[in-house]
Length: 430
Image 1: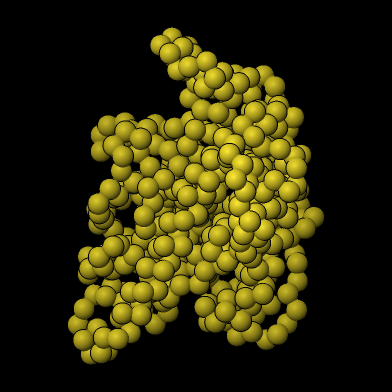
Image 2 (image 1 turned 120 degrees about the vertical axis):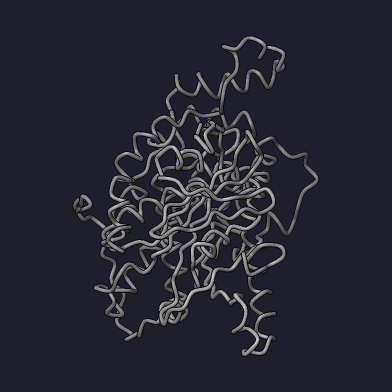
């Protein structure tokens, strides 16, 4: 439905008294902590409304970049939504950068320092293969974290048991230039093909998650076999013109979209009063990443809303004879500028990483919001992630009426309890 020109092939029909609910978790590196706070609030609201024993509220889960990791972790606990949310939140609440990428001096010198050296001395040095760094940072630690955080071995059984209808993660192919959505579903779904984007039915693996979350230049590309050959993939937010489309193709009729900035956040003084100072590399990089991660979602949400409005103008009897159908959207996005939040936590980054980013123009000056934009994607530190989680929770509870209406829950007005702090680890149960 969110394709530039909607057609019946874009919008699968579905006949059910209860609309199929989809969840879209967007990208943004460390910014994805915000969506975890949203999920915590939803779990708590669910309990307050007496719905704790109801089935998984999101049978269709889609994600991109860091959102793909959260999406997969949530899908792997689809038989117990609350417990899955608590496990994810525990990781994000206790995060350290070293769990995602090599943050010690040696690791930074092996990757980032070499990369910056080539930038300053000229890429002619790259004719020696050993001088070709693949990325600014080495995300090998993330591979180990995924094994614990995302038990994908459970996924096929959860789908067979009916706890989950589909999981989809998206990555961008450096080899072909195409945007590819990999999905695993309960029933056969014909892979869709659109201009510069397509879908592939596949068994979701940790390699797919590493590929989807490989921020360009920051983390290395990942090799994945597709159509009997190997392609190299990077962050799924690149060239993503229709972020909401996968959930719709997989049958969702109402979709909760959790963003990572810009849609609801205030512009702030930095945006309202631009300076004539020449931008640093960090400012340029932060601007580019914001374009990749944040802008397409707002455009796609507007597109769906326009199509919904157009459909409302068509007489109901005529709509019944077509496959077109409106999609109910609920969008939850930060009410504060996450760049400004990041500016308060740049000093939390490990020293070697802070030094490397300092060479690009990232400072520990809390007023330097533009310079902190780049850091906002790499700040996998508990001070920052906890503040984003708290913001996600607060923003969601501020929309309590809309959330309850979206899910069809009866709001009894009961106080929402926080149940996620200080709980012992729980392993997923088969």
